[in-house]
Image (cartoon, rainbow, N blue to C red):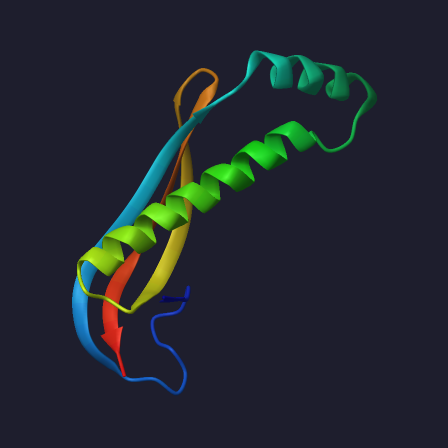
Length: 104
């Protein structure tokens, strides 16, 4: 599956636009990670526990979007975007979305 953030793929022709596809996940903070993050705010620096959690969430959301695109018969996704939002205190949704297409 080719995934691009642009509306076209250089050197390839879009033969069919299938439609929007998306994948999402909601991640919540882990009490142990939250404790470690709290300590990190005292001394400063990257909060690796949250970086890892959000990277994992993005990967899950993209994987689910790709699965949806494959189920529609697409072989590429153009205009892919990632977005996040808070759904409640301590939990965030990550959504990946784009346009499923068939390319030559």
